[in-house]
Image 1 (spheres, one colour):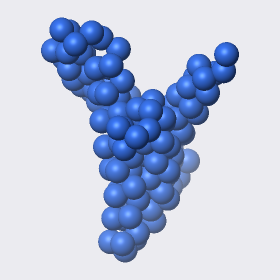
Image 2: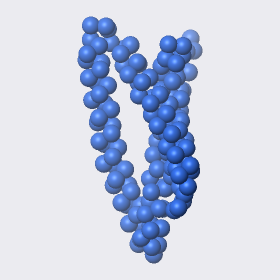
Image 3: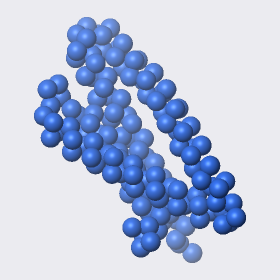
Image 4: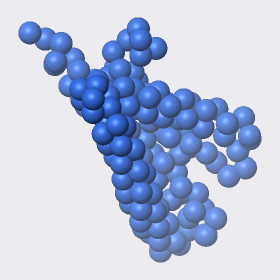
Length: 144
């Protein structure tokens, strides 16, 4: 796809797909069927795959060929920092949402499900916002 379409647009599309998949994961109910679980995970995974490959292509194209090793390292560093930071922040958010639900009198199982859904929906909004920012930036760059 990257050979036929600009990598930036593919990255934005991947972020959007990932956001939709995360939103659908956030809507899981207790006892959801395996099909209801696999479809959103597949969509989210496909979106992440598109985003990561396109992101690598954008970074590689930004630096001259003699610095491709630096570009690859930069990509791995930013990806790792993003994963670690995201996991830490989302864990804090999940625990805060769960504690709020439990404090309001919700049982532990429903508190977990509520916090789980809220965390994934918040994350989906972040991915959607990233897609919108990337797409608007790319659209502005095309105008003279």
